[in-house]
Structure formats: C-alpha cells, structure tokens
Length: 200
Length: 200
Image (cartoon, rainbow over all chains, first blue to last red; front, side, top):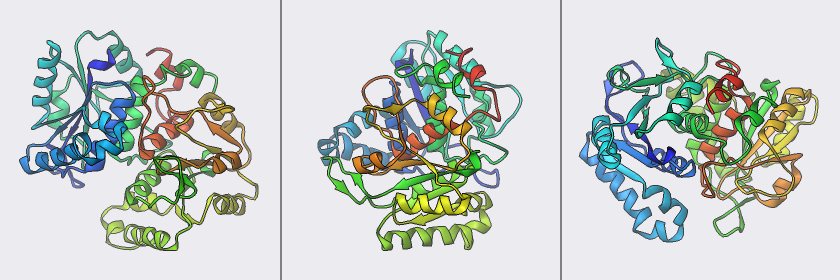
C-alpha cells in the first residue's frame, strides 16, 4: 500500500503569518528532507507543488545536481531519494499525476497545525490507509500552513501533531517526519504496541 | 520529567561520509527546527555543541536576531523556542550545564542511524525517562552521525529509526522529530494505544 502513497509539499495557496493567502518560496532543504523521508518509509515519493515556473526551475536544478550531476555520484543515497521528486503546479495536478500512475483517483489527506471540526485521528488515518486500494496523497503546507480552500478540497484533514501543551510551531520538515512516522512507522522494528503500550 | 530533558546537537566529533572524524558546520535551520521541536514537546531546550568559537558566534548572532532583534518582535513563537537554545563546546559541557541546572548528573542517551550491540528500544527509553528523577540529555549527531567515542560516553544508545527497509538516510532534523515524538509524544492528544493498537 505505502508504495502508492505520495507526499505533497504545497507552496500555494498557503497562509502567511497574518492569515493572508500567499505563494511561499520553495526551501530546497524541505525538498531534501521530505524526499529522504518518503524514501526511508518506502513511499512513492514527493510532489513539490508551486505555480511559479521560476521556482520549479530552481528545484529542477537542485534535483539535476543530485540525480545526474556530481552530488549523485558522491552521494547515491541522496540520489535515490531525490529521483522520486516530481514537480507540479498545484495539488490538483499532483492528484492527476497519481491517478495517471495508479489508475485510480487518490485519497487525499491534508495536515494542519490548527484544530477544527471533522479532523481525523492518526489511528483512523492509519486504518484507512492500510485498507485503501487506491493511491493516496498526504498534503503538507509551507509558510503558515495550507489555505482553507486546500483543506476543503481534500478528502480528510488530520488532527494536529500535539506536543506537551498549546505551543505548536513545528517546521514543516519536523511535522512531516512525525506525521509519516505515525502513519507508516515501526513495521520494520518493534511493533507499535511494543513501542508504546509497554513504554507509556 | 520532560521539562528537565535537553536535546543536544553535536558537531564534533562526528563522522563524514567516509567515516572519518570531523567537525561538522552548524546549519542554522537545524537550530531552529530542534529548538521548535523541544519547545513544542515541553522539553527544557536545545544545546548546540561545537568546539569552534566562530561557529558559536554565528549561532549567537542568529539567536540574537530572533530573541532580541526584529525576528523576535514579528515572530514571538520563534523567540519562545530560540530562547531555550544554549551554546557549548561539547557534550561534556552540556552535561555539566544540565547538572548545574538540576543538581544531578543527567542520564545521557545517544541516537544513531546505525544498528549495533546494546541498543535500547524506544519503549525502554520511554519507560526509563518516565521513571527518571535525574535530568536527561538526548544526543543527535550532525554530518554522518556521532563518532564512536560519543556513543561510548553515553549511558545508552537508542536503536535506529527504521522506515520500510534498509534505506535509512533521514536528515538530523527529521530523525530528531521522530525520536522526540516517539519518546515524548501523544500525551496531549490521543493516547499511544489509541493511536496505534487501533490503527495498525
């Protein structure tokens, strides 16, 4: 199942600090971190979505260095991760690409640091993903998060990652790592039950 | 308990791609991500360890921008995280600082992407941390990981974060997020049992 799951890193429409809808700039390190994460957890890969052609061109240049250029020669692990990065204009284009690849329209689950009505828990998302025959996309927003219209367009929205209290300002790199580990982690090592029911 | 736990980001002695012992350069984004992570999970904060004074000066400048300068004014959440960053020369100095703060020498657990003998599982580490009266440090290596001498100097080494197979090349930012979530996560939200025994 997990090999048909893509991560999507959305740069528009996202929110800025004041809640305005903006286009975030691509942070190349996000692309590296999320591609390595997807590869480590056996997912299909990462879609980087931005409507700005200049930004897609920047990412293409970074990818070429690591997949065809010197970076890939000296660091084949990085190449293996970055080979699974695809560029697209927006979430709809990522969904079309997933449908084209797998012959079925994907189940799309968004992530958000904000609570709200109708959020689904990690347990439920994990079950739904495990039972899914269709491909799936797990969507992350840059900047201050996905705009409401993106959340509305998804099939489900995950509850926020909570730490110890109301403070909740993880980077998208940290949040994505935690979400992917909660949804797809631990099959290779000790089981979830071992890791948590004993330890908590 | 968690409020006496510090993360330590070590830049020396670490390994390079070929297993040589080196001093890694500080990546400012690592400092941001791990400080925000520590704050979100209610930990004591982050120690950034490097023997190079020029590197510590760089981090001091970044911190000043976010804690005293313009960054902190426009982004108080970031300030709240970066206020809990401390600079030190090495792990020993971080341990001394923790002992000075809490009056007891810390239990020090290292992380590693490599397996090896005597690694402890996340469940065991979680139990030990929960039962601990002393402070604790969770140690992360930059570059290609902590040198053997650092692992040897710690009280325990955690088993690697595993994904879906042998590929295991997470960034230190991603690995730290997953480790902290596995050790300290979920108390505010659904319980570990809810999250995993239902879902897996």
